[in-house]
Every structure is written in C-alpha cells, then in structure tokens.
Length: 201
Image 1 (cartoon, one colour):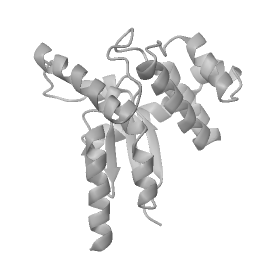
Image 2 (cartoon, rainbow, N blue to C red; image 1 turned 180 degrees about the vertical axis):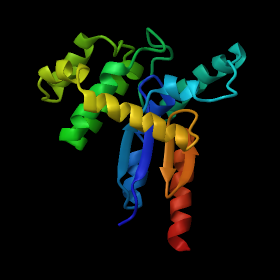
Image 3 (cartoon, rainbow, N blue to C red; image 1 turned 120 degrees about the vertical axis):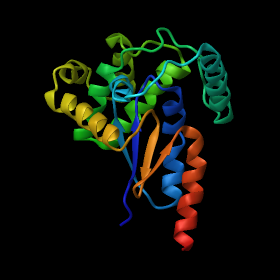
Image 4 (spheres, one colour; image 1 turned 90 degrees about the vertical axis):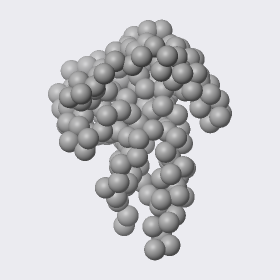
C-alpha cells in the first residue's frame, strides 16, 4: 500500500486552512491517505536559524493573496481574524486527543476549527467557541477540559513539530509525499501532477 501524504499544519496559518480543504481530494484521486500532523508554527519558526522579519509590503501582499486564494478555492475567508495570530494550543491538543480515539472525527474537528477562525473570524483560543463546535460534531464537551490536561496530546504536538523541523519544514502547510517536500497550498496542484507522473513511470 502506498505511503500516506504527511500533512503538517497549524490553525493560525491561512494557507493551511486552504490546504486542509484541498489535499484530501488529491490524495483520494491517487489512492493515498492523508496523515494530519498538527504542529506549533511558532516553535517551527523559532527553529529557523536565519529567519528575518517579514517586511510590511510582503505581509500586505500575503494578506491579499490568502484572501484571493481562499476565494478561488470557494472557501469563506476573513482576511485578518481577531486576534491574529491566535493561541492555538487548546485546539491542537484537542485534535490529538481525538485523533487517538477517532482520526476521522479529529479531521472533522480540525476543518471546523479552521473554518471558525478563518471563515468566521472567531477566536479559537476561547473554550466557549470550541465548545460550540464540539456540540455540532457530537463530541462530549468534557473532551475540551480533558484535552487541556492530556499529556499524550501535548507530547504529540511536540513530536510532530520536532519531526517537521528535522525535515527542514519552515512553515505550514507542508506536505511530505514519498520523501518529497511540498510547501504551500498552491503546491497541491504540483502534488497531483507529481503523483500522476510517478504512476506513469
């Protein structure tokens, strides 16, 4: 069986929001699963030895670009949610807690959290906002409190982040396909074409 596509992502990334809604269709087309691995993008960036701050002109362009990219993917988008960036620690922990129980439900939660933050502009650091999502997905609200204290979930975030750093990832979304790294939602088309070419060789 073909290896899954590894998907490193974090909620504060608008491009990860877009990628999260596009990668599974391409994976399914090529008979691949997607292994969702949430990372801490803040810790990922801190591990880059020669990082430099974004100049304002680049950030202005990127804000326009991610808005346009979401529209082209038919996804709702709030250009700058409040706050931006936000503390995504609790939803990351919740994702991994659910992944250990029911990976499909964890993915559904991740997509819902992405949409709440980037599609509606609601702060996903606030437990009451996450509680509403749990109810809509038939997940007991007690999981939210349990996730905050879940040592295994915390370790999973640390492990995935360390793994991404070891692969020289520098942002999200990052995809690993048979050892090949693709960065950015706009590279999902390349993943599709690359897999198609490999299948012919």
